[in-house]
Length: 357
Image (tube, rainbow, N blue to C red; front, side, top):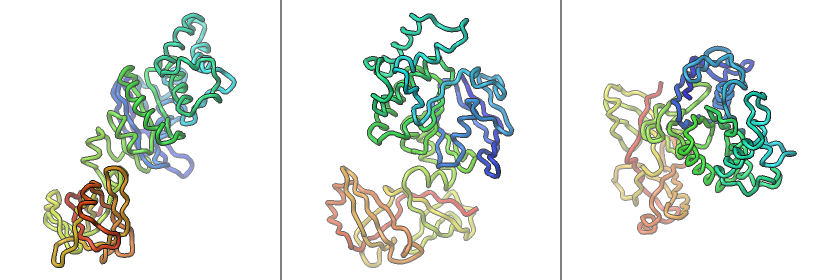
């Protein structure tokens, strides 16, 4: 089922949660709504579900206006962050609940319900715990049961609100891979909310970046990572170093160095910002007269194959401000024999330049 979001706005008192949001989600697509707390992503999810009413705008499901359609009629499954399982019911009864409360004319028989529930338990790889209660399950198991319960009524759309937010990092990683495999098997149109950029980039077909109630960018994980549309998107997707300078006729001038910025060939001494990923910072031993930023290696953290370097520039607007972060392969770090406290030379190999608006 396709989802069309048209001119959706929503206020809570003086707070503008959503401001004229437009978005199309194709049938069978897995889309992540990504952004910081308070950006409007959960509000948008609840409006799609019918759990919240927009102040203006419309929601179309499969091309039909569903704006005023009751949540029960939307054929939407909802999975919450904190499972929302019925504690007094077994796993089996939790999954069967949505089927048992259907109108008599649509309700499956007892035998059909049993078959359906056991099929779903096998799908989520938990058919061996049908008789247990939620309190006897791990967090990861509870979330898979919550997902099975949402799928029991055969929703046309599956909505997940921070589905793995309450779980530890290892379980989160396992479950998001599992969710991707499950989606590839079922092809239910799915929208999930997350503030975890790694989760969104790893699982989703497309990522919708939201900030302060508006959509900043929509694209595949590769598109939003490689071609961020705004400083917000660049800063939100992973670690980044920010440099301030001036753009002039296709060059960005920073203290002690200049970078190519061909996309700003028309700029005339304009205030600009350069965003540089840690792995795009070239780090070398300091040699007097070399071009680049002089910085002191304050700390080196080597975990597995990657060395993370915290660097403090010796001059400029960063002298007493935030450290720079660089990354290199651990083998390269050990090969260079760098020592904490040593003076180094830093130069961006690649930068994304934005003009101050």
